Figure 1 (cartoon, rainbow, N blue to C red):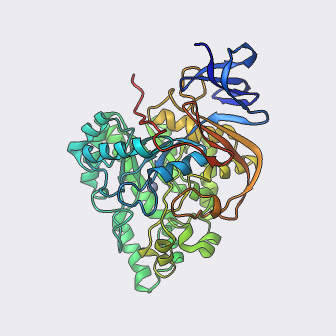
Figure 2: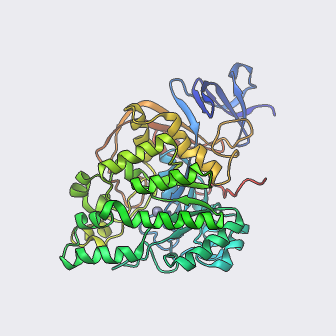
Length: 460
Ligand SMILES: [Zn+2]
């Protein structure tokens, strides 16, 4: 090597052992050296990171890229532009596209589209509903499988037929087959039979408002979540599968995950930014369909922060789930006709950094939740998720002092809105670097479709 490709100088660098002052040298997409740049050979590019912190690029294992099938909302370019703007260097898609990703052929098709269109590194979580496809999908390079326990009522989107399993026998068979692959099984916990009874009560009263929808999913302190979590944790014990529980939001669910972890079982859990920063009752009233999904009462949100602190929650997945305003506006009258979810991926790091500045959590915890832990759980560590010699040069440079107001005007998602419009934040990513290439600088995305690479599990 004659010259390094890039040197990032003068910043503070997150490592699992703590934050250190170090310069970072990049060569051919990898981290080539860490230390004093005065000892480095010359470099072609230089970034001055004085006053900034360099963290491993964010890994989002839960992005609804919407392609193929729903490109009026988002596609693999706009989704990964939003990812790059948000500090994300690896974005993993979800199977509720059209056609849903239930076979290896469909999975390969999504990967081929992603190769052409993604700006950041990528993979895709296929559905595990077709037992005979599971081994083939693992062979093809997926990082995990995704199961919804939801069957939509009154609509067939975003949880379309073919990707949901709420029958216990079928679900159990899926657990058995995924266990054989050694890959994690991500489950959206939901008790559909119970939900059928609960929501009927609201409908019989003629109440289909966003408030009713929020309350129905939270009735009896979130019973529809807790009974599902109890079931899948029991299935985990029987099958040994690596279980990753999505959308944590109830104190009861946290308790069950805590117990399973205490027993040393491979149970991990995910929280979404909406549960911590968006889904308060105040916002259910004010933003209606634009903040649902799910209402999370303040005391449940507090339990989630506690779960973050004590390690019950391992991962932040964005659940970036864009829908158009037209699709959302239907929900003011009938929330059961309007799809749940919002754009998240561009804003979540800013919200977490703001929480760090407010003393609600620590930068170390945020890095673990958004990069280090997902890299380890989903099998891409130490290629990703850490800044060390030999790892991919996936780097997000953050300015903890930068103050911004989040705005619809600067969103990259195709739908052109963010539920955080008007929110003041302190702390923001200022560079996103994917394998040594700058894809975002000062909030402007400069990466190109095709810059992203297909990332499969690290061998061994
Ligand atoms: Zn989701």
